[in-house]
Amino acid sequence: MIFSLFYALQKLNLAVSLLSLAGFKYKLMSDFLFDESGLSQETIDSFRATYDELREHFNIQLTGHINFHLEDFEAFNQYHNHQLLGSYVIKNGHSDCYLLFVDTKAKKAKEGAITGHYEYQTWALAYLKRDFGRVKIRQETLKDKLAELIHPLELDFKEDKAFSDTFYVLVNDHAKAIHCMDRHFRNAVMDIREDDFVIEIVNHTLIIGNKKPISPERAVYMAEFVCKLAEVC
Image 1: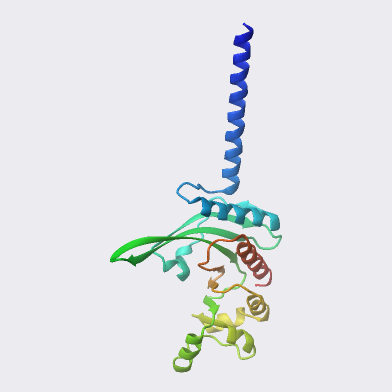
Image 2: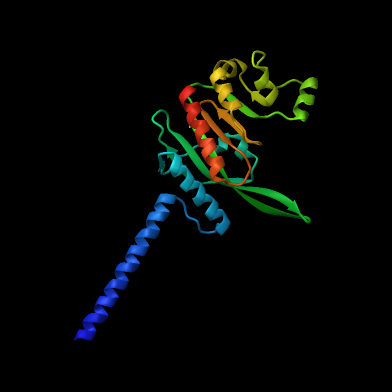
């Protein structure tokens, strides 16, 4: 009788432990947002470290399902396929901003065969008050400067030579872009210390990111940038 009771208690303790572990795993998954199956351990660690760092700096929450219409942006149309793995909203007391974890797939030729190449990237997104039209901003290269001598395409700000010498700006509506890209906007962009980043705006929606591997520091920096822009623009 005593042995049976002891055995029953052991089974009960085991069941409670398993339920607690399952609850812990569920909490981790629900907090972290997306399914990690199929990802390498290195990629999972990068995503989790980024998530933890963001939580240290911002009030972030899961978004649930939101269609951010990433297909509208040239940055994602260059890929064979892209998938939003997960997204978080940054509650900053002004205008909500977002961090997106994106899985991109590019086709590459290797030894006579076409193979798929996957990249996991972090992008930040903000909804702006003003309608910018379509705008693309990246750091200007020597090739850009030489091309401009022959066939000028970019938007230059004569009153802000430092900005125009640093960034290559393409727009589809000069009047909208000049009105919206005021001194506050340009100063925020000038403060960016990241290389190889791209800013793309489609009307009221801005994204910023690059092809570099995911890192906590880069994600925090991009989040700070979009939160700042959401306040002034």
